[in-house]
Length: 375
Ligand SMILES: C[S@@+](CC[C@H](N)C(=O)[O-])C[C@H]1O[C@@H](n2cnc3c(N)ncnc32)[C@H](O)[C@@H]1O
View 1: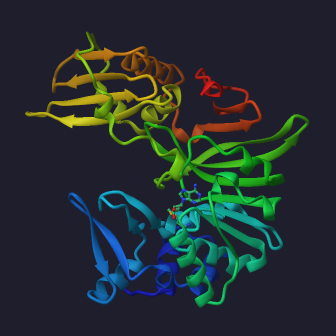
View 2: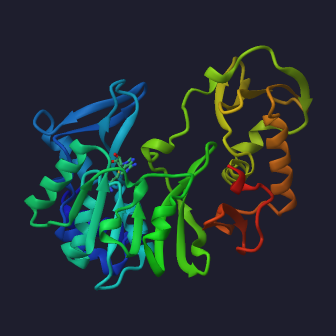
């Protein structure tokens, strides 16, 4: 494989992931200049380091692949805490941002600084602000940007508050996933401005949203559709707890269901369930001979449920425990999704207003039955 920024830009263009307006920026900004000497690749039980000095050829080949590269893992070595996003996703998000010369952009999640460099290459440093919560990463991004001659504002801090110092922005792009869209982002966006962000639920992370901000009499409102898929790491304060089994206590009330839990393997069904069954997380435990168990948990109420899948069965054993009957909620969500005509996730959208946020189907006034404003 030919390596280098020009070859990467060409591959992305050929695959239809790089709009013409961004082609030059992708050639001028060398992704390798933003990667740390140690990057991490996925292996069976976690992540394995690839060092630039020890394996220069492999490191360089990875740098120009259309893949997300983990640039930081937590102390366990199993959970990534920062990454250089997949170049095709970077291109798709920048395209969705629909920027014009002279506009001001705020990025949440500077990470390596690569995305901020691309924005600076198009708009000029003075039009770009990026916020990074991790001081080590923020320093690294600043240094990498400076080394290639860019000096956008790199703010070390929690992007949940946006960055009022540079507001209003014409565009906000988040490169970490959220469930609760931050009011500060909506307030710091100019009327008619756009927010592009990865959005997820406790069940499913996630999709890309493109929200347009209008300034209504009782405050700014952001609304817009799902435009595609994404798999970004969560904004640090919004990551759902990982350990589903920690919620499982006691026996649970036994019952049976005719809903085959494997139908929830359908991405669109699962996406709808994520919206309609808020705060619910899942895990799968493998059993012998093709059997498996779907576990659901809501740590806020201590509720959990399990469904035992058996091949060729027509009914499945269910256990439910706690004030929320999570499997019953998932069944109701699935029934709603079927009644709605199996909508794909790009038919959904989200509105964020001073009263809260809520999901809709096809049109902003066709609000989903789940009342997200109660969360
Ligand atoms: C996928 S990486 C960003 C990739 C980056 N845009 C790039 O070009 O390399 C997500 C980043 O979001 C950062 N992050 C997480 N929570 C944050 C928060 N509350 N405020 C600001 N940044 C945050 C992480 O530290 C991480 O560096």
